[in-house]
Image (cartoon, rainbow, N blue to C red; front, side, top):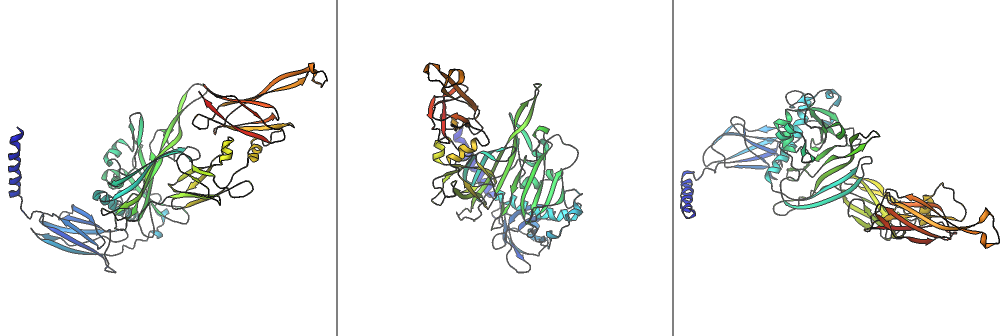
Length: 570
């Protein structure tokens, strides 16, 4: 059987070579797009080859010489159309192309003179237009500029010609403060389509932008193809909105679902454009029609767009924030779900390279935290470990007490400062929160307390008898993680005279055991105010089946107190 197949296949291939005309793919259209005012080449213009019926046959982006090449064109009648952000659309007359010929066409583009800075937003504030262009002239103009960027991003994705270096992250975010609780990062490098790609628009519109995935839910964001699709445009309306963003005024093209309340989750959001260049900057969105307990203005996402030097467009950064649900039980035993925290997943492009290896120099803008660490007297501290909670980024301060942590994506971070001397005594300060903004370094000055400061603050406002001291520290597990809600006990043995009066007869001296008990905080810390100084103190910590060994410590009564780490073991 297998031996007989080879001659048959050979015959079929030979027949095809005879039937297909040798110049069947030889027809070519070469287009040059120039600036009408300067006669310079228009780099990154959108070029469309359309047939006599106006249907698009091929599309391309012009290169650094303003050229677009369409090859393998069937004989027939065509025209070429070109468009670009901030420029008016231009096209050629209908032309014919015969077998084996090459046609050269030239288009000169003029500025469209759309002054987005002069838009009176309030005039359109109550209007929502389906499919911009049918009605609402100003909405149509702004949509047209946004569409060009989206179309260019779609073209770039189809070319699949860039080598990306990307970072994808998954982080847990505190519901109340927005602080990052933990973060995992994965790096990837290679030729790929745009690092962010959505589900088909028809699936998202029909089944929702949030879909059940096994026991959980899958939250999805729209890419350029979704926003350009008929399915999306037919089910969403558009209006102009103002940015209200201070110094950098942007023009927003807001969108929202049309019709009555839907049975599947949808999205509403805004595309933000630069009023000077008319270029699309980013898209932000929230989810609509979620279950009430999952609804929050913090549940949503953002997709950034960036023009490359060769006129292509990419998505340099994106993220989606989803709710993580918890269960609460009221005093009657009824349970209800609530948002316990958020899960944010996202990614950014750290570098883009052409096929030949040349970097296009378009790195994602990240931020960071820098500053100086001083002691309680204002002297710079060397060797303090500074890190970001939830990541493995740790640095040490230099001789001037300075530190710098870079490469952070936008978000609210918890910065941890660890002095090894205080750490050894069971004290790690509460982390400081800092907001990181893309392209900026957040500056901070941190004062590391002394042990005396720590002990004083632990019992500030608590009255203590003369001769008593403060006992404080931290409870950790076997691998050094702090343990909250652990029970800590301290005990000591004292002596007193029977009857409460001093006497010379030692037979009246009685022994009595006493002690205190407390529970560790969320950071594993504990403290006792007013334990006797100069006495042998016995300490132990316990949580469930885990217990520390018994520690003994004596704190002289002339000192403020002492600190100690208790380690739990099974």
